[in-house]
Image (cartoon, rainbow over all chains, first blue to last red):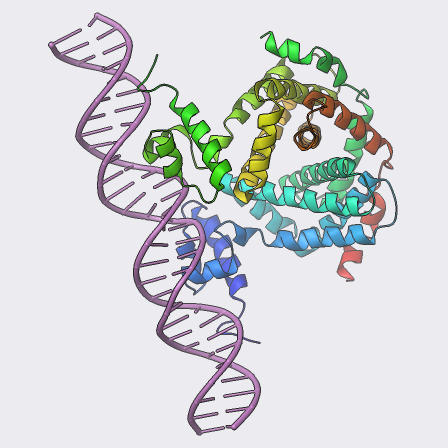
Length: 208
Length: 208
DNA sequence: AGGGTTATGGCAGAAACTGACATCACGGGG
DNA sequence: CCCCGTGATGTCAGTTTCTGCCATAACCCT
């Protein structure tokens, strides 16, 4: 099943990571990446949909892992199940990528609005997938969407803490902390904090 | 303060909304939009940074309103304050846009991956702004990020319910419901749901 | 009326993508 | 051994997005 020189997508990924880190994302063209990988620009676009995607194909595996964990999970409260799902994703990510590479990649993504945008899109797709899984387990759609969104927000907080720290705490450990912080945050919030302002809502706004 | 023909940005916004809705986003070029507005393509890019942005400049006002509300808010738990902030944004959005236009715009955004991506980016920027405000109030950065992410996720759930429904319930009312659902969701979750799986974490993953 | 400021138009060009067609490597059948 | 189908790649032309540069036209103030 070998080809000319094997693993063209892998070579493209490596070339992109190198060049984007060296020169910056905006200063690197797709032609540059393809040339470094020993391929043509046209071939790049046969493997990746656009210039950004070469850095994000791992998110497919992440989403797959989380959905699989959700499918295998026992019964339980929707948010708890969702958090267990993203925890499974966190374990995969930590094992497959490691702290150092994750840190470098996070720095790279943070350096470009285009890349940040794509990362947010991947997180949103992940939340959608989690919500669909929860709904498939019998959860009401609105509740599923909210639980998925909260679980992914928790994951993102943990991921930020992990890549921003020295790696002394693993990603799963950071997720533990974030989940605990979530419980504390919500416990300290009056049940219907929003209602009081909402009563004078529209009027108060229009009076400005 | 009038110009040639006044309010070029407004004409561009209207033209874009019309054309994108009629033909679809991908099938419309920036030149089409500019021509419909009686302007040149070059002028379009003087008013909006890119093809997507013409549909999203309202998010600046939304972010401004939320940040202002946070700055004016009294002391309180961080998540509660964040939810009050997004509630202020919800009131503005409901008053300034209205259900019908919000529904049409939501349909349009959902029709294109590019537009969904930009919307997610705007929500992420909003979360960043909320987190900075909370941090400025003395909240620990990690807690601020999580609270902001959860508040924005709650807002997104409410917004989806609002634009997906018949408008019988207002956006602020949907936000009330979502905030209540959030409290219920978290209350039903064991404090450290993630910890148990995490103990067998990396090992369990690598054994696959 | 004249000068400064600002919005706009026109033009050229880089870079991101896409479709159509040719080409090359490999594997299998005659 | 040759030929031929399949799939990955290369080449080329073209569209679209977006940017820099310079010219022009309208407005504002004196």
